[in-house]
Length: 442
Ligand code: CTP
Image (cartoon, rainbow, N blue to C red; front, side, top):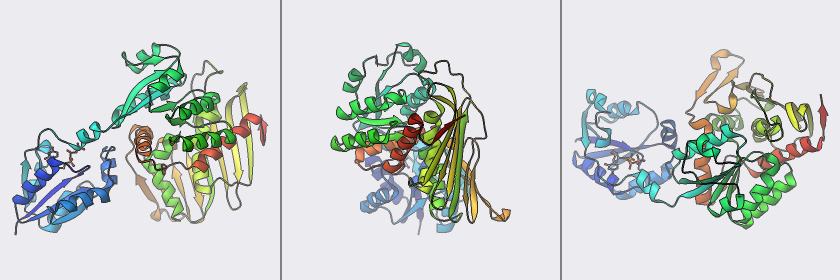
């Protein structure tokens, strides 16, 4: 019996896939098809795959062409599979010509001509795109990153930017970009908006968008008052629109996996969460610049609320103000019934930007800068038991965030990354800061 093996993602199964599978099958008597796992695709930068693994497998199974379906989970697995299954022929489409010649040490390698004119990428591109607009041109570094990351995401078209001047075109390297000073005008051209205006204006900007039926991705904090956040959430539900917190760290694979590990008890009961985020930047316009609590607070609050919950007993805020509402440094301590947490944030001071989660069996250590990490460690009393975890991180997590935003809009299902109670609790802390409640100035 001649065994043939082939691999692919098989997203949105199309005619090109079927033709390849039929010809692969005709090369022998038994066809094994390896379907890439969601994680494996993500690790090789294929982030736009629309169907989850089980859906892709089911569509493939229904064709009846494969005799056996396996999952491809890691680099180098093809060699293992060929040996394990006693494969005689490895085949893929000619778009991979030459790439798998190294497998000829183990079996025959055949590249089949690729079917012209169809691919999963093209099928995805044909779907209706979400037109996204941007507002807020003081934090230009962040704006530039989000703008450029959109180009990696299927299903998004940039509709324009609401900015103070046309200079934004030069900054973004986009001479034809639609630029307007009129936010309402921008909204008429958009299905969705990314809000990066000053946090004092978020409520107004988000509200106007949601009322116009425009989906909102808002750089956290969404508002500076939890009542306002609840109001926006109510409008979003009423209008059937998405209101999503933008905290890129939440979407990084390493951070998300770390959360799952803490929930599954790998370091025992959690006793303390300590997060530090700082940066030193030249700030020339203190009136419009984001202060430390708004720039870094939501990111540092994220692991605290996602691991220990939002029902803390006590909170103390200590801030050092540079001017007006601009805190150069803020430290917040939380008491929970059985745990504590602390955060230090600063825009204008520097410290070690690490995250430490302490438990009764061990601790998780995420080195600086933990908010954009692809790596963390679990450490135990006995160092031999320590474990290191590495994950792919593309575009600091922004790319995954945008993919998730599109998915949330298209499916109507709430995103799994940041729950409403966490977003609301973040706005609650902001309110305390701005009303100086539980707060000491130094
Ligand atoms: N294939 C083919 N003809 C096409 C598309 C795909 O022969 N028009 C083959 C590929 O060469 C590969 C298999 O089908 O052997 C699975 O390909 P996959 O990467 O899943 O499909 P694509 O349509 O190429 O996906 P994408 O656009 O996301 O890269």
